[in-house]
Image 1 (cartoon, rainbow, N blue to C red):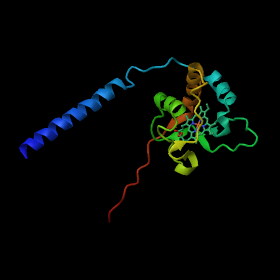
Image 2: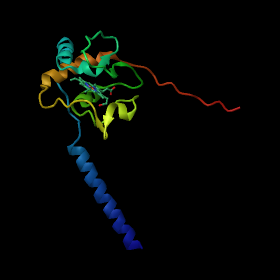
Image 3: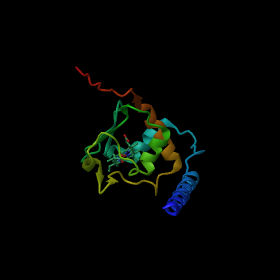
Image 4: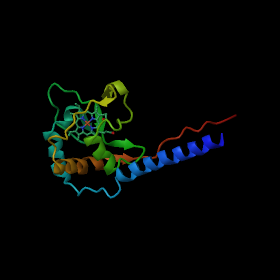
Length: 150
Ligand code: HEC
């Protein structure tokens, strides 16, 4: 029994060290893209037809005939949409699906319905779009429902 638990301990230690190592080498620490240009970002957003599926809170976007946007970007969120989250939402859309939508509306087989632009979107276009989108998010504190006991 004792031998078994030492073995388990060693194995757990080994596995957790492995996980730490992966965390360290795959960490986003130190990651920083240069600032983009919001005006250019708006143009890129339209040029890439992001408005085929998206509206943006507080922004008048020309409609694309035949398409009905179904995911709104910007608006009130209960926690900060960070730069990193926005970049990730664009270049790795299935990593974390947008909140507030039924899964079947925004995804198929667990994958986001959003196109993957990585093959032809330049880094400049990406940072411009993010610069354009970020100010459209307004952070509001989450509303808590307190249960009142009689
Ligand atoms: C074919 C439809 C479609 C197109 C075109 C599209 N998206 Fe999306 N996008 C989605 C869907 C569906 C979601 C929600 C699921 C998810 O989070 O990936 C989404 C989510 C997002 C989110 C995260 C929203 C949140 O609140 O978490 C961002 C940011 C975004 N898209 C940006 C873009 C940009 C920028 C473009 C153009 C380069 C684009 N999208 C083009 C369908 C699309």
